[in-house]
Length: 289
Ligand SMILES: [Zn+2]
Image (cartoon, rainbow, N blue to C red; front, side, top):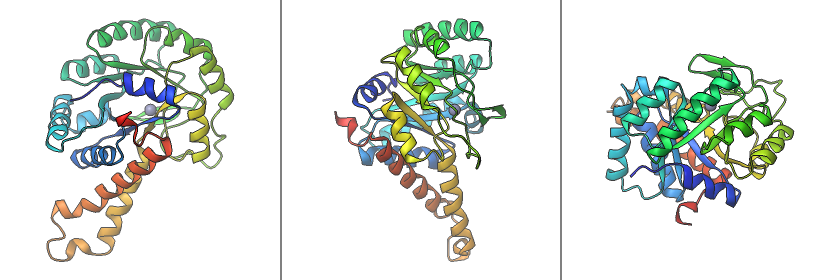
């Protein structure tokens, strides 16, 4: 059964580790991530962007697939199904479809409007036992065609949004989506520290986890980050393994063209990547605590 991300993230924040949000794109992705979480006894959050939701034909398909897999694979670790960077309308669609968590990304609205819409969605989501993430300060890079610059959030604005009763808060600290450019300045721990001082127990969310050096990840966790989003890194691992399979001509040998064989190395690569991240974030074994 899907659960809200609230309990797993509050435990992570108190226990000084982070839970990974791994974005799903299809059946292979979902299966690989769930198996990785089960194998490492880690709680996990499956992220679904609006674009990926559309690709999978809609949120109801996603909910049906994930619920079916939890049962058929006997998944016994806590799993949350979370809308990533949801629009106002998208949030309502996911609430209706049976997600257990949503993110309302109102970072592109003026702060007053972000606060107003977040407040309304907090009421609806928490009323249904769902967790809700809000964002302050646009996170750079491209997310479903929306390009941000990687700014640092205003700690006072973070406090204002945290006080609305959200479950977790994404704050820009110089992080961006996708691959980091050569001249990236790194995370602003000064900003993160200031946000944590004002928001206390609130689990903070680090988007754009791909390519952030391990020592920065660990420092961010020590400063209150309890949820880390990983998307691009799994995509790169999948693409690399699939390319190797085809370049080695394996699809031309015997029944190597069978999609179940063709997609297997990529799926295995995603699983390995997720296990590596779970261990880095320190959430392995935490499902049983
Ligand atoms: Zn993000």
